[in-house]
Image (cartoon, rainbow, N blue to C red; front, side, top):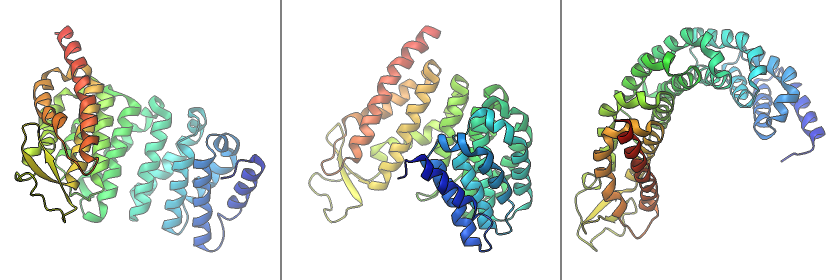
Length: 342
């Protein structure tokens, strides 16, 4: 790790001198290095070098080799995330024009993925000032959600969900509410496998939408909560197992004792589903506060067995239970606020 500023400046000059090298691998690596430098030396690198770096990154997004163009966008993501709002405003218009053109014309999946992520970064930095671009970008993201349905396009679709939610955070709920309804509907209709990259994108997008809408997110709870609750019910995960009769050689299962003394064998992958679900509940109750009031009884009913569940061999159950305890305390606060508001 380099701390001497003179060395950082020298490395930046060296990398910038190679972004137009005849060989695409050299150009790719130079741009990757600029992105890494932006991560490691932020925000000083952005403050001192944006006049040199931003024009280069913008120009290299048009590299004739798609992988190099995608890396230029990836480097911009690293650089732009820590760029000051006032500085980003000066670069935003030509950048947005270029990124929109890439989304409209490129068939390269990596270029489109990085273009969407770059737009999300611009929105995140500019916040309310991004509203001028919102009406042109949101329909494009909806189109990707509807059409990018092949397995190879899962990441592209996930990034579209991510960008939609980040645009919502940027412009606020008044502008975003109608599009939020479409986003939630599309996410709910998405069938994802355990290893589907869309899972995490959808979870985080749902949390951002809730953060944006606050109490107005209540309208989405009736369709969302049944699936979340289903992931948290131990008795629906596996047939009951007799105590002491666990298959010791099968490392993919954990034997869990429920609060009423029953034993169930739970696949370790299920704990990931449980953790994601209880984290979603944590966000919903935190952001909605008294607006979560109507859902408290059923949520408490689902969480209670998790608070008393035990297993001896891993910390998986403990992690879920710890977050569930936090949600339980938030439910108490939500009940108090909700009662005051009614």
